[in-house]
Structure formats: C-alpha cells, structure tokens
Amino acid sequence: MTERQARLIVDFEPDVIMVTPSYMLAIVDELERQGLDPRATSLKVGIFGAEPWTQEMRDEIEQRLDMHAVDIYGLSEVIGPGVANECVETKDGLHVWEDHFYPEVIDPRSGEVLPDGERGELVFTSLTKEALPVIRYRTGDLTRLLPGTARTMRRMEKVTGRSDDMIILRGVNLFPTQVEELILRVPGLSPHFQLVLSRPKRLDEMTVRVEARPDAAGADDRSRCEHRLAALIKQTIGVTVSVDVLEPELIERSVGKATRIVDLRGGE
Image 1: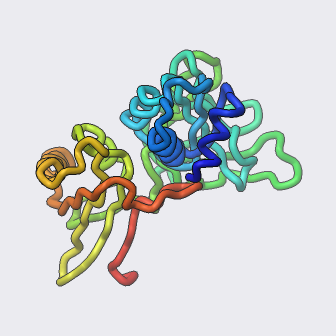
Image 2 (image 1 turned 90 degrees about the vertical axis):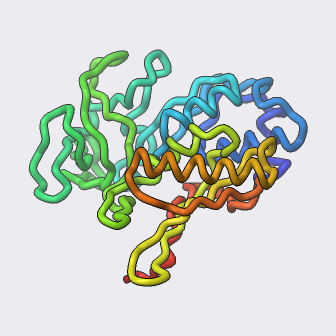
C-alpha cells in the first residue's frame, strides 16, 4: 500500500470500494500512518471477497471505517465476482443468483449431495453461460446453503475455508479463519498474521506470527498477547502452538489474497 494509493480514496471520495478484506486493512493502516481518520472518508459500503474472512474482521473494518462491509463470492472459472453477494440490509450470508447458477453442497470425500443446512464443498452448474459453461464444478470452498432472507434466492454461508487450506496438526483439523477469530479477541493484536508450519523433529509444529497493534508494541505487551493467544488456541481448537507477536508492519502486505500459510515442512 503506497501513500499515493491511500490518497486516491481521500481525493476521489468514492462511496463504494471493492478489494480483499486484508488489503482493506492495509489501506486503513496507511491512512492512519499519514495522520488521516479512516472514519472521515466518503466510503459507505465495502464489498470484500477473494479470501475467507470472519465476522470479527467485518467488525474491525466497520468500526475503523464507519461503513458497511459485505461479502461477495465469485470464481474466475465461472464468471468472476458476482456469483453471490451479501445484502447490506441483513449481512447474513451471500444470496446466490440462482437464475444464472445452480448451487449444490456435497460431501468432499464421497461426492454425495448434502441437504440444505449441512456444511460441505460448494459445487456450481452454470445455467446461462454460453462460451464456457460448467457442470457440477467443484469449487473447493466449504460452506452450506440456507433459505433466502433479504432476497428470495438461497444464501450460502460465508466461506469458512477451503478443503485444501485445512491444516492437520497432530490429528486436529483447523482453518486459518479459526485462528483469525481468536486473534481478534485479544486486545493488542492486529488482523495481520501468518501460520508457519514446520517439522523440526518428527512431529509437525505451528507458529502463529501476528503483528501487535501500534499501541501494544512494547515487549511486555507482546509477551502478554503471546500467552493469551496461545491459551485461547489451546482451549478453543485443542492444539498447542507457538505464538510470535511482531512489531507492526513486519508481515508482508499483499495487494491480492493474503498469504496465511507458510509451509516449511519440505512437501513431506
């Protein structure tokens, strides 16, 4: 995030912005670094997608920007963004445009179609696409289908992760979004984090690298945050991890999807 990019939001006064949620937070950080109040921008609605994000991150974005944050879903293999979108009135899941796409949820292992309300892998069949139609395309995204609310078409729950993003750590299955949710429960920790997987001996280990907020960057504050987050992960997810709280701005920012998993196990 450059100073010029941040200034564009201030100078052009847009009402709506559409980026990944992690990049939106990088924009907010840059505005604050320049001494600008993100809540004073003209932004009213942010449309965020292309990576899983939690309700806690939504709260963070809305509070720091004083705007609505809604989710969008799309696939480059299908049409790009616009397959499903949340309604600002409810923010309770993404309405699938069923006049163009037929959604199903299947068991990722057996391929069996699951009833609405059960969580599994999302599958799409295009109904009106002519140049490159898809039939029962497996997205790899994990969600469930729910009845419509603000619109008559069915909703898909916010994507909790991808079947290929699941980490199996000493027999426990976990997703980066579970860790993100816990990080944002700890005052003093920012949403910028990575999960580093290693195998120093015979067993897999995971280190959560997360940035401190600027007002909690002292050594004592970072140590307290490390112990608090490690305890939360143990209590909630059931695994023992190391936590390394870094000073602000040390985790690389991405203009696209955030890199949440760093696997140092050598592909074994």
